[in-house]
Length: 268
Image (cartoon, rainbow, N blue to C red; front, side, top):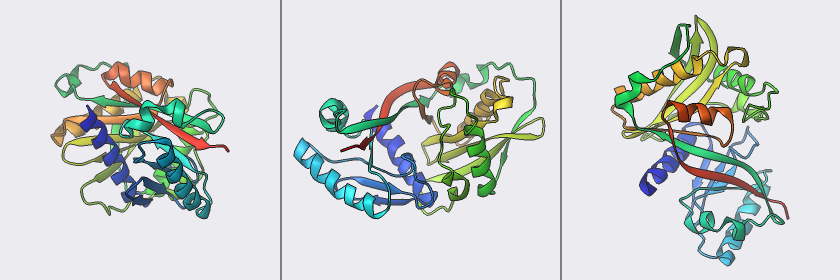
């Protein structure tokens, strides 16, 4: 399981290189920065190599200066790879010094032998149409998330995604495919596959609010998992906000929770 979590993290970070993020993989931590997007999902440090509080504070001081230069607030993305910090979050991230910005759940799907048995209530013709129009992709993604509905996990997604969503395959080990989700010929959503030879991540999954609860999202995910199976990839993964309806839907389809991850920012 630890190896799988490391693979998920590494695949995710490599994919950001291809999305024109600035990714600096240093000895003490990884630093991820986006010049167009300001939120915590696009500007953070992770993979922090600290074994005690003193080492952690030294790293935070170094990273804070770098983020000040980039006009960003320091965010620490805490994953199970960072065992010392992850297992002792109360010690390293006390509430009087750090704010928990969000909590995600990582989920994996491996039951490809039973993929055809997943049932849906969708009576519409759903297709995945590959696209290279990243500007349109980003705009639809943000519009689908910013509905004002409290059930949407990313309702305040940074507007920078509309103009900062680009793809350029710089990392040759990780590829990306982008799709518009069509229902009866109408573009109603987006989804993205990032993958290497053995693992595939599903990102940027969105459905227009007036097309939800019709089974479209489930059919689209099944089709994406079918493409995963066609590539002979044995593991698919998702990252989504804990407690929101998408995570529950993925569970019903057969995705299994394997870890929670946390975004913290320093407040003093």
